[in-house]
Image (cartoon, rainbow, N blue to C red; front, side, top):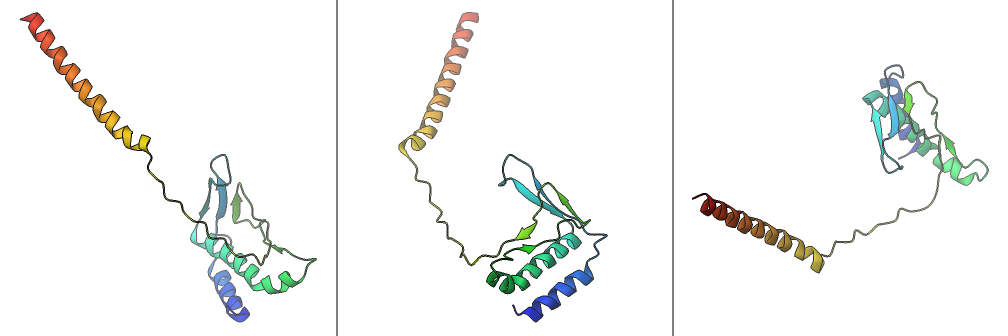
Length: 140
C-alpha cells in the first residue's frame, strides 16, 4: 500500500474506535508461547491494527536507519491488557520460510492395534458366554 492509503486507513480506524471502549489483551494459558491467545473487542482490534499499520507505514524509514532499527508500539495504553505485551516491531528483510507438512506413514504396529482390540473383544465375548453357560449349568 502507498503511504497515503495507509495514513487514510490509520486515521479512519482511530476515528471510528474509542480508546475508552477498547480492550485488547494477549494471554498465555499454558506453559509456552505456543499456548497464547488474544482477547479483544472490536475497538481494541481496530486500534491495535492501527498501531501495526503505523509500523508498516514507517517500515521503509526505519529499515535504512541502522541505529534506529525498531518501531515502538504504545503498549501502555489504557485499553491494552494481558500477560504478554508487544513493545516494538523489529523490521527485517527476511522472507518467510515454507514449512513442508510431512504426512504420517502408518507403521506395522499401527495396523496391529485395531486387530488386537478386536481380538480382545472377541475373547471377552467368548469368556462371557462360557461363564454364563457354566453358571446356568451349575444352577440347573
